Amino acid sequence: MASSFTKTATFASFGGKLLKLTHASTATGTPMAVNVYLPPAALQPTPSKVPVLFYLSGLTCTPDNATEKGFFQHAASKLGLALVFPDTSPRGLNLPGEKDSWDFGEAASFYIDATAAPFDKNYRMETYITSELPAALFADAELGSLLDASRVAITGHSMGGHGALTLYLKNPGKYASVSAFAPISNPTRCPWGQKAFAGYLGSEDEGEWRKHDATELVKGWTGRDLKALVDVGTGDKFYQNGQLLPENFEAAVKEAGVEGLELRYQDGYDHSYFFMASFADDHVHHAAKHLGLLDKAASASL
Image (tube, rainbow, N blue to C red):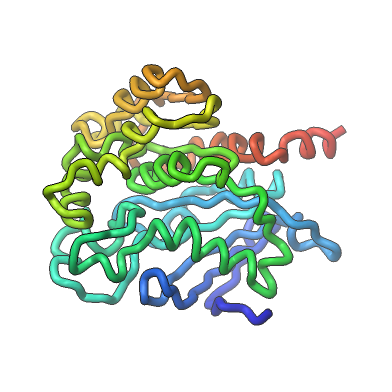
């Protein structure tokens, strides 16, 4: 099968390779950029398929931000974990209102399928992230022989943390685990989320909003072990200003009787990549644990 991706650059990174790719998306109706990191284990003469961690970026970001500043490759290279860094929205559409502010429209999709015009035709990022992109990667002539479609986890930062949590909760069994850095945990109750949901879903149906809110979704979650790691910096101005609301998510988890949430408040850390890079190894290890890689790593070191 031919590749549906165009490779624009390749970089050596921590013994593996970082591929910068583009492809045509039917979900968004636009070209989409995506970066893929292949660890050394995927590049051996007789490689075995490696599991995959999807990373969803935050507001204003491209696939390059976390690729260049998150240092997720450091632990992923050692553990044999591939990384996928999608874009944060379709680009180049020039829709009305799409570029009026940094927290809505381009690079600010909130990883949902919009239902309100003019965004409903192209802002279908939930479909893109959960269906189209993984299907294209796993069916690709080159990447499909290297990536294990049966072992996938998800993580993200800020808006991407919201995306990771909600897509995980909406799709039981699809992802082996979830983690998040400073996630927008209760978007129906914070200015960022209210603005995005009004624009993408319409301002009249708050019931529809709740379908995309991790704090609301976890109340009806039927699993027992959430397998979730969340880090929030106490010096994060967005946490201090009530945009993140991790305490609401934690309370909902407890109320629902769900176990498996490790919520850590990191003293003095802010919202930046300095924060993320400091704990990236922890989040990669969290995914690796639930993808069965830590046992293999321990055996290899004996």
